[in-house]
Figure 1 (tube, each protein chain N blue to C red):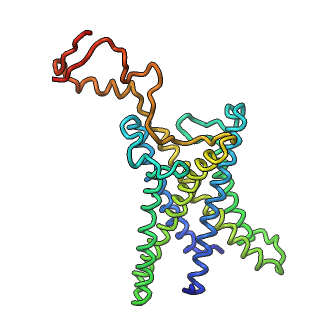
Figure 2 (cartoon, rainbow over the protein chains, first blue to last red):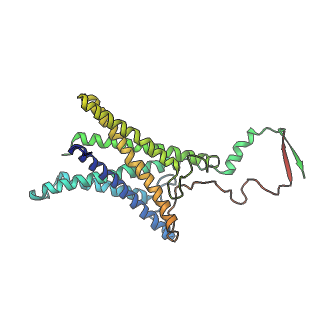
Figure 3 (cartoon, chains in turn green, blue):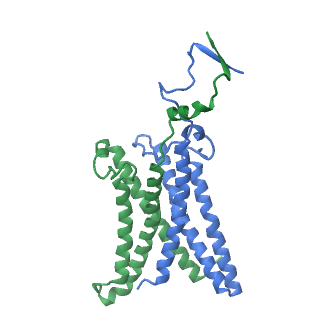
Amino acid sequence: MALKPEEEKEAIEFLTRFFGGTASVLTQMATDWYAQEHPEAQANFPYTRPHENLPAYHNMIVSGISIGEALLGLGLEEDPLKLIPPAQKEDAKKFGKGLRQFGEGGVLYTVPRLTRIAIVKQIPVQTAEAKGQRREPSQPAGRGRVIKL
Amino acid sequence: MVEQKEIEEFLIRFGGAMKGALESAATEGYFRAHLLEVSGKFPYTQLHPNLCPNDNLLVAGLAIPAWVIGALVEEDAEKRADIKAREMGKNVKIFGEGDVVYSGNLVLHHSLIRTISNTWPTVNTFPLERKVGVIRKADGQPGQKTDVGHRIIKL
């Protein structure tokens, strides 16, 4: 089934955004891999965090890279400083639009990811001790018999 | 100039991606808050050791209906020449698209780190945000001890 030109354009734009997100995934994995390979780096920037309940700086940097891509694409598309020669303007506009969409995909993955990490970090992990303390009041005395062996 | 329409579309897409993030934060948060009870139980299990946990797959699955329904509404409204319905369908589709970009990459990310760690064990493993499976109690933690010296009979 052949796609209409409009549908084909939409499909290409969707794939550009999706792969922009995938590029951010790979960047994130590269920074995580480096931290695992060099444990001494984990105590230093960018593997530290501004607050214990916030994401680490390297997560924010990955997000910043995709925001930068989107802004660079926007800059090429708009050319507000009129730096691009008129002969190359059309090509630069096309490339800029693609780059903006690619960066947008990265933003769509990394910024919600930062939000998710910040939310999840607020929730304390359940420990056996905490669970035991919570259960104590619900176990009424006299419901069982303890026989010393 | 970037049109006003494109700015609106980006914001709708971003809203869709945030919906996916909030869903995955909800499942992740529930896992952390009830670690001992839900560990090793659905949806905190895996179909395959190289794949992401099933709760991530559920989040990705929830993204698809909005995308498909939006696309169908848009197509149907186009046939009926209903501009309002077409616009609504398009917005729903874009919202779903943002969710798919987020949750598709979430699944890809969490599957890739497991696949690489399992395929090349010599490569240092990636830090998993969460390990699925039954939590083993560490030594010294309260649990079932074999040598307790007494027996409790439930009445």
